[in-house]
Length: 276
Length: 301
Image 1 (cartoon, rainbow over the protein chains, first blue to last red):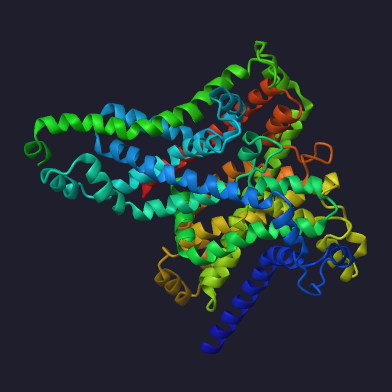
Image 2: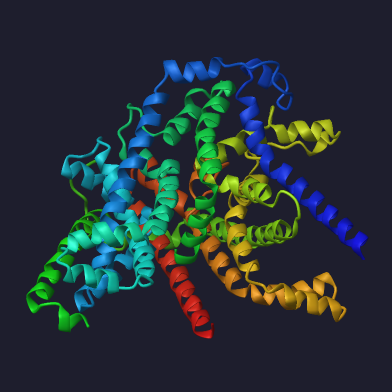
């Protein structure tokens, strides 16, 4: 009996390992090819690199808009996230703790937005940014990201707030603490797990977003990292070394952040999936 | 306790606080989601090109064109095919991966991370990686076929209309299976092992245990995952933009892709918006079904 059990484990392990190799292969192939010269790639796509060919990275980092695009992606992600975790918990707190008809209506109004896909309103948005005179600045996309996350964020935070007892807030109020003080000093820290989910989920979505920044950031200037990679297909369609290096550069930061925050990623996505 | 101890005056003040707390997000949300959605309804009745200052009202003409257009019918067919294939394949693979990762004895977390990692990539970068793998001349897939002595199977995977959609489907399965795997894994952890042990003592084999114990207990996760993958498939965009641009011909053009192509590539934003609203309606119907089904389950639990 025991022996059979061990065999069973070995078979399960072997199958899983085989699938894992197949699964990781595309990423491994991409990272490996980033260190090959164009000639090497064309000669034999699956051969290992002869040495560490770093010219494509040097070219991308010192002679193109890539660094500026990385900077833009960073500003968009951090900027949007900061405003989201400032404004959304505030709204959710007011909605959950004020049992009034109007707050319920606001809640429903926010949730309705979760069903509107970006494609449904992207064309008028473009016009609107021009009307407000913010077309071409990074504040446009930041506002769009915040607006797009309100529905999901409010849902996540209100359901989390339901599990936090009100007694602490009430006693703080009796001690003379203001509502703003109660929120920032007592409630906000308690929302930590929820905020972590928001940061991971929305941060990843913004960092990876392609359609929106491509549409609303002006052409001719560095856009975001993902959009810049898209333009490289057209520009460098025969320079495969550049393309591999560019995609590798966008994969590595995610890989590092994922390895560091693995726990939060899995939890965040699980929470998002069940709510969203 | 609240009303007895908190003075009336403070209670009144709280209403204004809650209004101030809600106001900033309410403004941004109204201006950048609801406002433009309402303008889309108006724009869908115009022949606006996206450039000229005035949008000309043309009534139902855009919707009539959608109803009659061969291209839209083709895109609808592609969207439905893609959605059915993705929902089935993603869920079957995700469930299989979850079962394996749940049972494997060594390197559990390592495997979970490997299967999950593609989820973190942007659809565009992922599409890019696959474009390179599927390239006819030196793509790694054709190269592997060559090495295996199967030269006759070499194909231009993305340039051949027969295989382009299949290529997009399979690469998307690779990208998203890990996401659903996490949900199934969470659900599997809720299956009490005693049930399977008891069944195995009673002589049930592995398949019978799965069929009659594990799977019924996963029903909730199955519903969630199927709905999520359905909505995800209806919205698919990045991969198509980078892998095929809707081609060859119109072989991989989906509803989302038409909205973008027509609106920005062909400067027919009125028509593009009308298309977007049709897509919105489709997603709305699926979401409402989702909420209904999930509510019903909540009652049962």
